[in-house]
Structure formats: C-alpha cells, structure tokens
Length: 485
Ligand code: NAI
Ligand code: MG
Image (cartoon, rainbow, N blue to C red; front, side, top):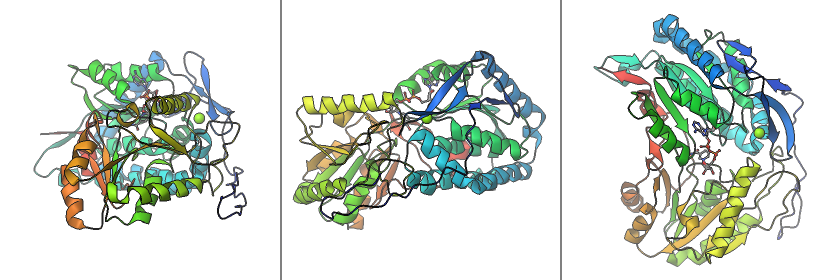
C-alpha cells in the first residue's frame, strides 16, 4: 500500500513481491517418522494471513496420541540411527538442510510474510537468511564437539521437545533444531498455531534432504499439543520460546522429572540514549528496535530512556520519522510496518494502549492510514510515563514504546534494571567508556551498543530473571543439548 509522506508529498509506487512461485497446499498433515500423516483426531484448523484475514491453508491438529507417535519415532531414530552416526555424518545432513533452505529462500520468505504478517523486507533479509545461517553454523560444530567442550566427554541428551512462538517462525525452528541435531539429539517440534506454514515447508525440505526418518518430527496444534510434548515421559529436554506465563507452567510441569530445559521468555528491554549519542542513528535504532517488526520481538527496545538534554530533539525527530513509516501490505517491499500476527495479539496491544491512556500517559501515534482488512496497529509512543506505569512494566509485544527521561548514569541504570525481565538492552553514546560502564551494569542477557536487534548464529542469546534461562546460539547453544562428563 503506497502512502503519502506528509512533508515530502510524493508516493511510492507499490512494489509487491510475487506470490506466483510459491506453493501453499490446501491442507497440511503432521510430519512424523519421515512421512506426512493424518492427525488421529481427524481435525484441522485454519491459518490465516493476518494482513487480509484470508484463510491460507488448514493445518492438522495433533493430540496426545499423535505426540506420542512422534516421540516414539524420535526415540527409535535416536536409538537406532542418529546416536550411532559420527558427527561428520550428522554435519553432512545439517549442511544439506541449510543448502536446501537457501535454494528455497524466496519461497520461504513469501510464505513467512503471508502467514505471519511480517514485512517481506524482514522475512527476506532477516528471518530466512538467519535461519539458513543457523543450520550452516551448527553443521560446522557437529564433528567438533570435543573442541567446544575440551577435556570433557560429550554425550547427547536423547529426544528434545521443542515449542516455538509466532514472531520468527522459521528462525525459531532453526534455533531449536540445528543445535539439537548437531549435538546428536532427535526432535519433536511444535510451531505456533498461527504460523505453521514455514515449519511444514521445512518438513518437506527435511524429507527431501534424506535425513533419516524420525530424526525430526513436526507436530502442529495449539497449547495442549505443546503441553502433551512437555508432559511426555520419554522427552529428555524441553526447549521453549514464548510467553512468561507458559514458561512458568512448563517449569512446574517438568520439576523433578530430570528433563533439561531452556526457556526463552518475554522482555521489556531498555533502549538508552545518552546526550552525546549520534541522534539520527539513535532515532533509526529506536524505530528498528520496536517498529520495523510490529514490536513482535522478545528483545524489542520497548522502553526508551533519553537523557534530559536531548529528550526534546530525540522525541521531535522520532515523531517525524514515525510519520514517514509506511504501514500496510507486508508483501510490498516498501512497507516498513506489517500486520499484527493475530486478532488476539491486536486485542492485547489495544488493551495496553487503553491502559496507558487511562493511567495518564500522553500518546502519539504515527499519522498513517491503516488498511481496513486485517490486523494493524500504528506505531505508538507514550511520554509522561512513570516507572510504575503498567505499560512500562508489562510486555506488550506490539509497536508501543514508552519514553522516560533521566539525568544521570546511575539513575538510568536503576530505572532500566527495575523490571521483572532481563533480556536485552541498547546503549547509544559516542564515548566507549560510557558504553562499557553502562553495558557492564545492565541486567540483560544481550546489550547492543549503537545498534539494536543484531543477531548472529555465533553469538549466544538469552535472558535473566523472568526472561528465562539458558542460551541459544553460539557454543552456549550447544551446551543446552549435551551432557558433559
Ligand atoms: P504462548 O506462550 O501461549 O505461545 C508460545 C507457544 O507455546 C505456542 O506454540 C503455543 O501453542 C505453545 N503453548 C501454549 N500453551 C502451552 C502450554 N501450556 N504448554 C506448552 N506449550 C504451550 O504465547 P502467545 O499466547 O502466542 O502470546 C502471548 C504473549 O506471549 C505475547 O503477547 C507476548 O507477550 C509473549 N510472547 C513472547 C514471545 C517471545 O519470543 N519471548 C513469543 C510469543 C509471545
Ligand atoms: Mg497465520
């Protein structure tokens, strides 16, 4: 959807990514033991394009029996094939998956955008390349585990149950599957109910790669399907990314069972602008941190802290940049802000916007037209926010930014750390010593300096406090899938 930029007064011509090269089937089955099988309940649910509300496909609903079949297939593949293969052979399969994904990158990007509502720019330039890179990166570790953990005997865990969210569907599948396979485990993975399509495409790729049957099983369904995986007695490890509420349920469910777990939960990350920061870059960093991805990032820079001396200019420039953002059809290459992933999520975001207004904060929304069909929310900022405001404390997971000011470094450290979460943070300053001082005092798993939302497969990611525990990515990500003796 082209949009007029107020002060410039010219339009971008629409530049739609083609959908002619992709195949989305009417129906997707479960991927168990190397085959696509019907769900034992016979039930399917729809997945929609959140930008248009059109049904894209129907997805099999896996119940406990299907999950049991998947776990049995994974156990058998573990005992009979995968745990007996050398690291070098495992690595070859993982490389093959990576290459097949790369060959089909364009198709995967378009499907991700259709199913999740995220912009084609994001799925094409971030999600899919990073997902491929994850497989390439961990393929390289498969035959080098003894170097990752020197002087230790490294053993795989067994069957990993993996449950992923809807914000980076294929990327989260890659984060989970690649290190598990590299370390010698087999997998039962469940994508989120609103975004199963790229996981099913990955199932096709895995089948085409010749990976032995049962090494990766993909079951689709709702939260109860996820719970059936978590509670299955023959799972050795649970890897979960999603809400803190479900993370807590999982932690309770596995207590005392000996199952290993990594939980990557929510965030309320601080983005801190010091008065010597490069202001224009910082404003772009704020936009990138919370608006380019509809705020659907666990590490989104959703709490902005600006030093008083530059607060006025930062907020003025931020509003101007917000007004130039193009919101609309996620398949349009010009679009900056795509659709909210689901009606439920849009309702949650709107609920928080109301709370913000009722609590007395001052709201500003980007002056852009919102498409009529589908689920959209304009980029929104709140000033006059108190530290205790609900919108500054709770995760919103939408394009909603709270802005607070500060005078001293100690004050901003205290404010930034005053959160139940501890996933990420950003610091903008021209001075290295200021950056290092802040980064060492922020309680966050990842701290970016003069940038935001940068990822690399070699660098570990994860949080403190209610943001969860365990690390994904890098060598740390491997250790979550091994026993060391
Ligand atoms: P959710 O935590 O309910 O869903 C994440 C995944 O867990 C999905 O695959 C879901 O089917 C599964 N699941 C749900 N209940 C389960 C259970 N009892 N046992 C096992 N698996 C279960 O997240 P939801 O409802 O989609 O979003 C709610 C909020 O969670 C968002 O508003 C956001 O604040 C947060 N969130 C955080 C994410 C992150 O990356 N950390 C990703 C998605 C949501
Ligand atoms: Mg969908």
